[in-house]
Length: 158
Image 1 (cartoon, rainbow, N blue to C red):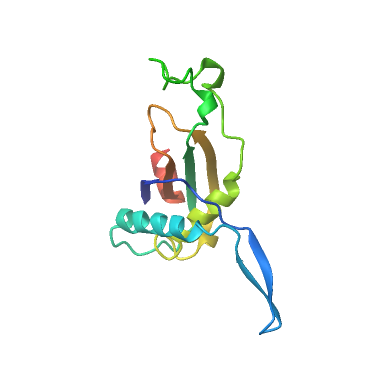
Image 2 (cartoon, rainbow, N blue to C red):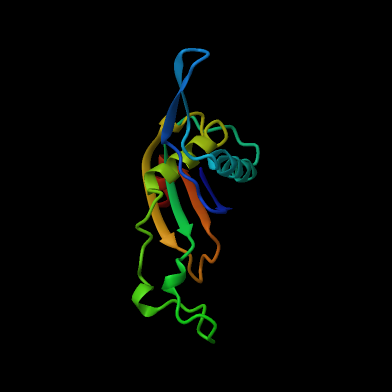
């Protein structure tokens, strides 16, 4: 079985937590460090439900591939306002987004959002292929391209 889909939007990270002391309960409570994480995960879950098309969540080991597309910084483009203003400067054509958020935390948010929709538990994911790229002509929209496949499917396809 193989499922692939694209979730448009600015990917948000998951994983970091911040703690705060609650005087009423006399305990430390933890909250996600990224307040926009829930909205991003809701979008991923919505697209996962559409792609799953009422399938029963996987209960066998699987492979997850995530390719995140980020917006290029303004400094990567040629002169502003000219006829070449939206062309990437040759110096930055092969550049990769080596900035925060890191790819593992981006993938963690995606994994958690698809749990109980695509697979029964994210512990079933045994192999990950994660990358960050800047948007290009082939993928002009920021977001994440997601592919989930079982090992049987990988062996059958070669």
